[in-house]
Amino acid sequence: MDPKGLDSDKSASRLYVGNLDFRISESDVIKMFSPYGKIIAEDFLLHTRGPKRGEPRGYAFVQYTTKEEAQLAKEKMNGKLVCGRPVVVHLASEKCFLDSGNSQRALKDKKLAGGSGSKSAQTDRAAKISAIKNKLKSLENDGCSTKRPRLNPDDLKSTGEQSDKKL
Image (cartoon, rainbow, N blue to C red):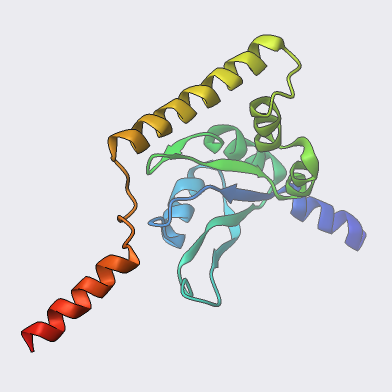
C-alpha cells in the first residue's frame, strides 16, 4: 500500500472531539469512546502558554483502528450531552471543510443575522433587539445598574478636606 493511501486511512479513522467541558480529563475521553472500537491514539490538547497553561483546551482527537469504528463513534457521540454540553464529533479530515464556512455555527450565525431571507425572521430579530433596548432603558431609569456609581471630582475634594480635618 502506498504512503498516501495509508495516510488517508489514518485520517478516515481519526475523530475531532470538541466542545468538551474543562472538567473532562484524558482518561474520561478514552472511557467515553472506547465502547465503539479499539483506540490506537488519543491527543488531548492542553494550553501550553499563558495563565491557562496546563488546562484543557476543550477538544481532543481520537483515532480508531478502522474507519467503521470511527464512523460508529461519530454517529453515537455527536451531540451527546456530557457534563451539560453537547459534544461535537467529526472526522478530523472533515474539520477543515467545516471551518471553511459550511459549519453549523456559520449557518446559525447567518440565520441570526437575518440571512434566511424571510421577512418574519428579520421582523422577529428586530423585535428582540427593540425589547432588549427597552429593557436597558428601563434599567438605566430605575438606577439598577451593575456598574459602580461614578465619583464626581467634587466628592473627591470634600473627602480629602474631611480627612485633613480629622488629622
